[in-house]
Image 1 (cartoon, rainbow, N blue to C red):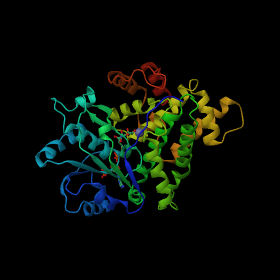
Image 2: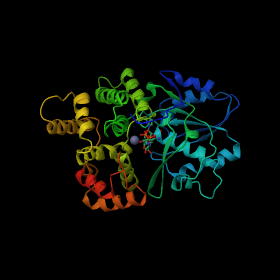
Image 3: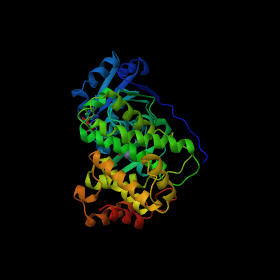
Length: 385
Ligand code: NZQ
Ligand code: ZN
């Protein structure tokens, strides 16, 4: 196992009716920026619960944070914070709202000329507003990690800082019943790929991390399809298991002490930035191709994945790996997401631009061994056609 330091300070309040806890979590005298997306929180009732929980506190609303939040939208919140002397941010929504609030939180104290430098130039974050999250879409893990992804001028850039770790997160599975099938599928697949990118590398005898990861993958494979099936899509236990899996997939626990490979995400971010494809739908296209192109360096873990996650015990090594990759693709298809570039109307003519963007954004040494060059990323995209 590799050395690691691990801490996750976000207090999780899980279960039906937990939203009222915001009344205790947010200081009574806090001046709150209530941030949300395009309005789903108003149609599913969560907005009313949040407003009730905020009680008499001074609240300024900031709505319209879009999927794959943009710098241009988020930056509009900064003058509101200054004008009203706000000192707490409550994010109500999915990963985009949570991520957007992390950027707003850091940008509010940024003293340089251009807050985008927080991402583009890794400008130092020295202060940030505290954040709480009421999560409505299980997928990204953003509700209990310090990371954020923001887009500007075709660059989907990630950054993270411990000051941006949410203080608390409310996870009420009931809130997820209003998700469309598309967003349910996206969320399950995003959590699945987060787990894979911290698992499918090379063995370091991290037994606990491996078995946690295999448990999350099996749970998502078992319950993901149930959240789409007519007879079980209202089942709150199914929703609860998906929600908790998604949080644990990216709260730092399974990735501590093991190598990580974020190739799929980094290539996926370019697909979203250039072509507007939903985050998870880029991952379902790229991951199977990564498994194929990086098959030899990942051989040992692919065999472990085949045996422990898919119970493949018969046949020779290569046929078990082939089958495990095929079953992964079948699972993605069951969740309603694409597995080829052609499924989203992209072809070989789009690859040059994607590779140029990856290179421009410094994504030239990806993978657990930093061995995935732009040339290998090109092979991955060609395999994904
Ligand atoms: O905007 P509203 O109206 O709220 O609608 C949203 C949005 O259209 C809707 N939605 C959310 N909860 C709902 C709901 N609709 C009905 N009922 C509900 N309960 O779902 C749509 C998508 O929301 P979004 O927040 O964009 O989805 P997701 O949670 O998948 O977040 C994706 C973003 O997170 C980033 C992605 O890159 C992407 O920008 N990621 C963040 C990570 C992190 N911070 O650690 C890691 C991830 O790998 C990922 O990169
Ligand atoms: Zn993701």
